[in-house]
Amino acid sequence: MSTTTFISRLPVRTLDKWGSGLYGASRGSRIHKGVDLAAYPGTGICSATPGRVSKIGWPYYDNPDTEFDESSFRYVQVSWDNYDYRYFYILPTHSLQVGHWVHTGEALGILQDLTKKYPGITNHLHFSIKKDGVYVNPDDFLEDTGNDLGPDDSDIEFGGTTAWWRP
Image 1: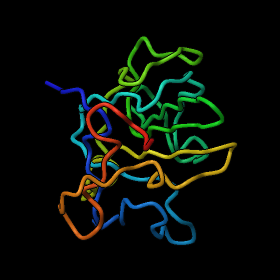
Image 2 (image 1 turned 60 degrees about the horizontal axis):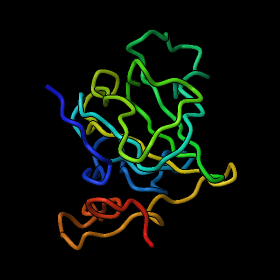
Image 3 (image 1 turned 180 degrees about the horizontal axis):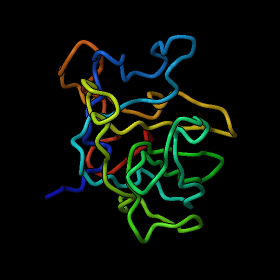
């Protein structure tokens, strides 16, 4: 049985054998352009903002060695006010379609199991933000809850119980 979780409730993925979930973390020759929010597979993921679903796709679509089917890793992009909010590794709900308007807190899909492809990784939602087509640090939109859950800001969450963004 899965539960629905606002991304405000998810801690940042700490270091595992696949790297760190923090924005700007090294990924070999590139940097991590999002934040990884730890959660169990099957967790329901809701939109952090209102907006229009502008993309539903596969994050590794450009990899010719990847076979795609309904169980392949997916992502949903919600666009609003020159921002694109990208939710990676979720299986979209059946009713979600490109062009669909979503409200803050509306279900987007359920978290997929990354350990099938990446043994030892902490399952997570990869969340990234683009403004005018350029990646921005999601930490700039996150609030620190003051809970010291770890040395790596694993206590960061989106704006408390009802508000998603800093005023």
